[in-house]
Image (cartoon, rainbow, N blue to C red; front, side, top):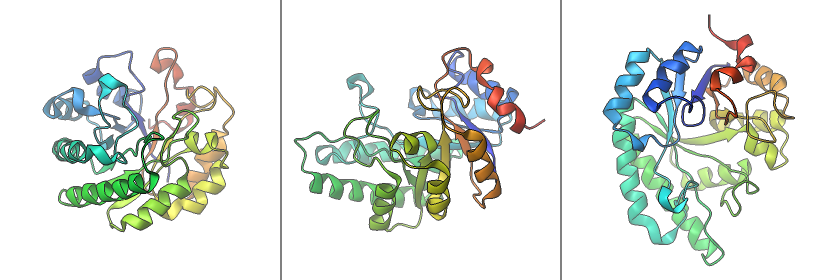
Length: 262
């Protein structure tokens, strides 16, 4: 199945945040996701989504650290930040419940060379279990996203197989793999074969082109083949555009025309 959503933390950023919901709907997207919704009250976001008539708010990230310090890749594997992660889980649960969001991405972080990697992994597992158990109370699922360690040096879980190993160790039923074709490509993994092999574990899909992390058609990734593979697969979830336009977002949607709902 091929159902498109759009990330309004990266697309339509030429508009004010609350106006992006309507822009997504008007552009033909039935659903949106966000990276970090916490800059805005959950009630305001919910009203904007409802006013736009969107079908779903499909994904959000847990709080990922201190933006003032440039922390965007998460702190879940940092042994000295357990209390901060726990507080972030509670904040995320409140937002997810109000927004009707059923999937949340728990970013792993990039613990520096001074952090014991065994302890970092134990911390990651502990935090992941805590998040999964908290989200189970509202019927939501916690996802792990492998992020390439070229763009984010030292990222703790850079490959999809690494992420699956974490899920196996966590052992909670309401967990899944967030698979971004861009990150897999950057790590040298073949897009379609990797997607098909890991399909039973995949809960959410994202994409952008490479190099540049812009819209499909600006780089070297064959998205016609990827979208065809998703369409013929039994994957039931959303496939979300998470790219960074270098011009007004509405001018970057030529790739979407063949798939747009009329």
